[in-house]
Amino acid sequence: MSDSKSNGVKMTSKHLDFYYGNFQALHDVSLEFKKQQVTALIGPSGCGKSTYLRCLNRMNDLIPIARVEGKIMLEDEDIYDPSLDVVMLRRRVGMVFQKPNPFPKSVYENVAYGLRVNGIRDKGLIEQRVTESIQRAALWDEVKDRLQESALGLSGGQQQRLCIARALAVEPEVVLMDEPASALDPIATQKIEDLIHELKKEYTIIIVTHSMQQAARVSDITAFFYIGKLIEVGDTDTLFTRPRLKQTEDYITGRFG
Amino acid sequence: MRNSKMDITQEEYAEAGPEKEQKTQAADRPPKAGRTSSIIHQTAVRKQRRRRFIQKAIFSVFRLSAVINALALFIIIYFMVKNGIGAISWEFLSEAPRDSMTKGGILPCIVGTILLGVGAILVAMPIGVASAIYLNEYARPGKVLRTIRLGINNLAGVPSVVFGLFGLAFFVIYLDMGVSILAGALTLGAMSLPVVIGSTEEAFKAVPDTYREASLGLGATKWQTIYRVVLPTALPGVLTGGILGLSRAAGETAPIMFTAAVFFTPDLPESIFSEIMALPYHIYVLATAGTEIEATRPLQYGTALVLITLVLGMNLIAIIWRARLRKRLKG
Ligand SMILES: Nc1ncnc2c1ncn2[C@@H]1O[C@H](COP(=O)(O)OP(=O)(O)OP(=O)(O)O)[C@@H](O)[C@H]1O
Ligand SMILES: [Mg+2]
Image 1 (cartoon, rainbow over the protein chains, first blue to last red):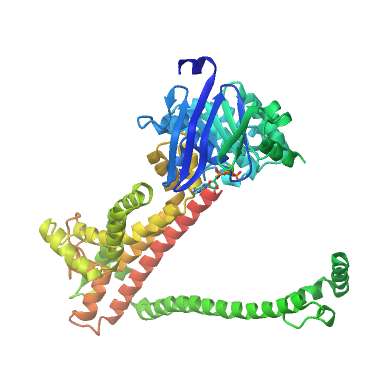
Image 2: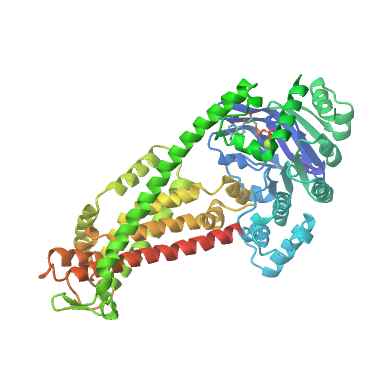
């Protein structure tokens, strides 16, 4: 345990099984996520990437039929330990969802929300954090004149960057991103990818993506899932150029054409 | 093979021109001879014609129901206005009844009804919304929840006179509130509770789970999520519940005749423990128990007109308010 800090491991899952009722969606997944690294989760639709991601901040707790076996550690803490404060966990492990889901509030209030619920009252500080976060999410120029307007009036891509800004505002340690660019045009995607590079310096980032190119561009480590199992994980460069397993190769080459 | 067929279709399309094409698609007349080559096309056209007919028929039925509804409201209002407008005057609205209620106005009744309506909402909204929050956001599905729901549904079916008797036995006598605004508001509140709970729950269900997830994902507690995201988003719907509850409460006679309203009290209420007059009860009294039932007909209609105007007016204000809230949410 003690050496997990020294070698920069931020999160670990150990023999993780996950069930929706009787349906087992994840089988024995063991993975490590290091600080200042981007890990990409890839795999065909329905293989359990989102499910796995949502285990990491216990978002699956909301689903009554969901059940987890195995362990997930955030540094030295077992996040499924009954004594752990799940609210605290989610402050530390932030999330950007597959579909943009801004609140029906103003652009400003969307980003300020996380700060407010975490008890920050200082208006100056909130304003500064809101501005910073929107800038980091490469959205500032587009919304700076409409901060008080409803976030639902933004385009899909703008909404997604707003959700990223919202997640960044509370300064999590780990950022989970579920296909953050799936609704974005190439320019906005580029912005998000730049952002990920930027964030990497401070955060641990885990990103689900359907785009091989994107995984190759942004990630250091890539993990390939197939029907609920972790098939292969490794250095992104190695995994894409010299995959060890045929399944991995088929998937990658199928997409690369 | 496929190509050649496509070519034909396109040529035909060019020849017929877009307008004709549209008309053919409207299926109001048989397809042109050139098109009969395709059996699929023929069948499709025939099918479509049938579907269109059924659709039209069903829509007509729906439209008729809507029209009947509107008509009923219109007739009621027309009838009330026609018979009651003569009684309306400033004196009627601003004075107390006199001469055994055969003359004068109905001010105490107006005040009484407004107080009872507001009181009922003040009772039903907090309790109703709190119940809905518990049922929808906290309670685990199971036997307890099912039992509670059964109770609420049955509450909605209890006749209003039973609520009146309950109010008399429990609030007026057992809790010793006497015949008072308080007892009446509590009784009416209890009666409108199922409506408020039901519509609040609907409003809560309509809030997408993604909002809840987003909020929890930012480290908000469950209560913060409900209070800051779910409740504001659901507010227009919650308001509808309030409106429905209020309209129902304001027009009821049976629940207040034992608990709050009296035959005659010319003074305006001094506290929540005062007894009062109320519009629906006043109508009832004039129409059934007054000394001169026939002579006071205009007063009865006038009172009814005021009651209807009051209820519709309150609904209108609430609807406008709700629409503005919705607009603010949608941006
Ligand atoms: N709430 C749920 N209840 C039951 N089964 C679910 C639920 N959510 C997901 N599943 C099932 O779990 C499996 C994994 O789903 P998951 O959403 O994790 O896939 P994914 O890899 O994220 O797919 P995609 O790339 O399409 O987003 C699927 O078979 C899915 O049908
Ligand atoms: Mg997914």
